[in-house]
Amino acid sequence: MGSKRSLSDQNDLMDFGTKHARTSESGWTGVNERTFIAVKPDGVQRRLVGEIIRRFERKGFKLVGMKFLQASEEQLRQHYYALREKPFYGGLVKYMSSGPIVAMVWQGLDVVKTSRKMLGETNPADSLPGTIRGDYCVEVGRNVIHGSDSVESAQREMALWFKQNELLCWEECSEHWIYV
Ligand SMILES: Nc1ncnc2c1ncn2[C@@H]1O[C@@H]2COP(=O)(O)O[C@H]2[C@H]1O
Image (tube, rainbow, N blue to C red):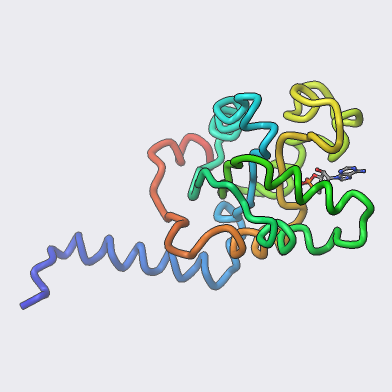
């Protein structure tokens, strides 16, 4: 009893288990690297959510987690802990908690570094056209999107914004057309 699964079901389960273990042990490296991306309150208000998701999808990255939420100041103080001494820190926490944000986790090869290139520089004035900040904003204090700056920051930020069971492992049918 209880073992009525077909051999192929069991193989699928084992495959899933092995893949999952591999990604967990390796800290999400290679094609399983993950990054935390947030559309900030100004990005939501300016209706850029669809455009931003479209850019990540078209690039070939895989969405593995997403939520629409209004962040608490406490959560934002943790998120921006490293900036706590900066003169703009108070304003940054207020701005980020002023309206809903879209928190996402994207997965793919070199996703942390590539996402930062897609976002552009922190200051939109230094961002090239073609990047998200280069195309859609003008001031550093209203720069529409956040992306983790390293694999370590990504892991810390994902753990802050998502529970483990909110991040999915799923098979994308186009994967063989994106990776060799
Ligand atoms: N000089 C600044 N004035 C106001 N906000 C800033 C300044 N420098 C950085 N920030 C904000 O601090 C944030 C830190 O990382 P983000 O990618 O979220 O985007 C940055 C900006 O929103």
